[in-house]
Image (cartoon, rainbow, N blue to C red; front, side, top):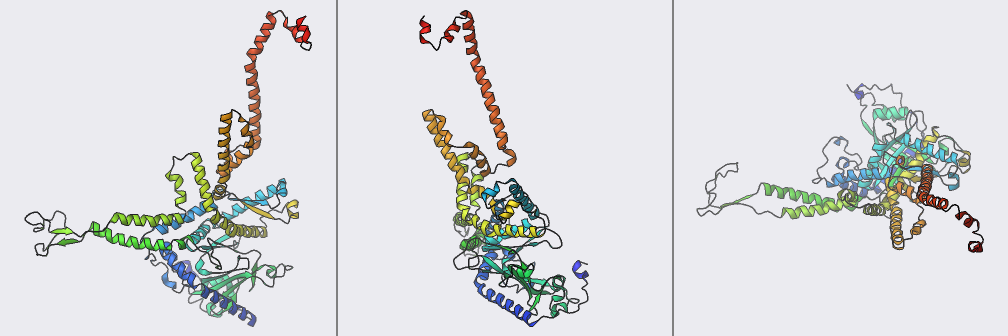
Length: 583
């Protein structure tokens, strides 16, 4: 028997009494959710239409969970061509590799004041803090990598993605959970930032009691012994606290309030050992939008842009399947004279009467359309889909391996230009708030070292330096400009024979930064100290070589001096007197 059937609930004593004020709070929060649900009707229809064609396993999740028994059913009835499904998966992998690659540090922390960054203690503190962030973010139990991928897939399909970031229950660390858009309802503040999220989710009676204990409604606790797996709906509201008291250290002093509401019984619930009203010091949801239209809270996605292409491609594929069937198993046209009764299509069969006495075919296939033209039309739609999901951008280098280094640099620069607006939004709206939330959790858990005095005086203000592949790609313009400048100066130097024109470029600064832009591993790059040692050794070697080259001339002068019997010596002594040579 499995763990569910073995579960033995404790004796239920009944839920705690709820005051009239709590009843009003629960009812108000439910009414707010119902209002947001009504506003989101058009979005839910749009998202469902998209999911049916590129994310079929999620196609039912925007219908308010009205059909709970759909788990495990077939959902790909609208998919005839899988180009969109595959493109979305690749889009998620592309964003992951560009923004948050798992095999490298894709961001650094620095003090906001550049002068403070020069302090060694500050630099070491930020370096250590960055390492701890990556350690706990990619810890096996943190679940960041898989949940982050869900975020990117949601952006590609629906234009909005949410990750919930919280303490790891029962131990130190961080836990990440991608929350499906179908569960969440968003609100913006006056500056266009998401500051309120209502999550509508489902728990079984067993799960609810394990989490909320006796604060569960009576009608949930009363069926625990008989139907522990019966499902119930709950709300989790996170919104700004309007009555925040900064002087208080408990939840009343936190900027964001947190409520759990059972729709069944319209009752406030709270985790065991907690309060009916909780709070957060930082917003626990990292929310981002891919595009955003004016006066809209939810984002718009690449899939929305090419939804007509997805629909067209599926219809074309249906037509091509029918047409292909006709080509491979054609419809036969026969003369209406009864001579081919019992016509056989078996291999090797002989059908008498299939031709006339003069050899004219009496049975012919029905003419079909141009299959090749259909394939070309489908390829047009596929190319559009791949372009929108960024796939074609990353096929250039693999499809043209013979490109020169300059061509590769130019293509990289072009990609950086095309991706800059999209990627920049994810860094500011998703990754930035996520890092703020992570730092808050780790510092509260005592996992971040105390700040150096200089940084503490600056109130701990910091900035995020993104060092992901896309950040380097966006800097490729600098490298391309430097390379073009060097090529032009070398042409001038070759034409004039004067290499001093190259002195305008500080190669000591340009070389390491270009290596960083191109993603060269740091282990392959010598430090500035090692480079200086090599330059000193090279200078000494050049001095030795010059001395060796000058040695034959010096030896000849000495030999001539000896042969003259030292007569050249007075000449040197009288160099200051021009008339001495004539005496």
